[in-house]
Image (tube, rainbow, N blue to C red):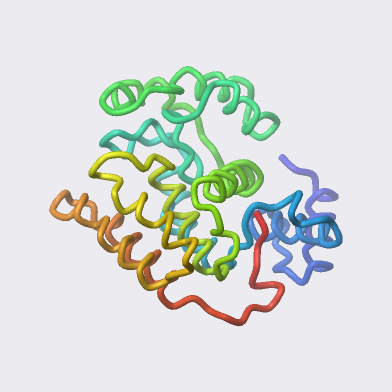
Length: 259
């Protein structure tokens, strides 16, 4: 349990950064601290993408729906089904992380016992993951911890992957960068095969800055999930496409997040 003095210090920092002083170190607080700390640094060495805050929030909502939903249903590990692994926090799929990466990301954030439990199911996907879910049912990850790992570890890592597979994405408008980051966060970076043809097609369209065509390809992906009772995933593609097709061209500094 945090002491009153620590909570007071967090609130003081939040007030200084013109944030809601709730004493909780969440995504907005971490982002504001990072931006303030590195505001005079060489951005090209520190950041992969510059995304819109609205796009970041949309990505998080796609993963957890809302804070209330997270607290009620996602604090313990879940298995989303299909080819997924056991997932914790904000879309952190243990099936696609190495044990060493899990230990690095969650060190000092959850207990060593919980980390070992998470590591024990790393690499498991599909039905194997579903069968192993009970073995980690005792793990509980508060939203603040999930948000910290998402902002400090997951988002920067996926931003770097997005920039690598889609050269020039960092030159798009921040809303579009956020949408393509969301796409990679959800689907990964693979581009071979019929199921990945849209992912591959987007690569050239990014170089051309063809926002409308990128959005069309994202919508085209919905063919993979229509009729499979995956309405939330269909909505996610629609929301990503809208961010790309109708990006804002005017941003205030507070509207942007560098990852």
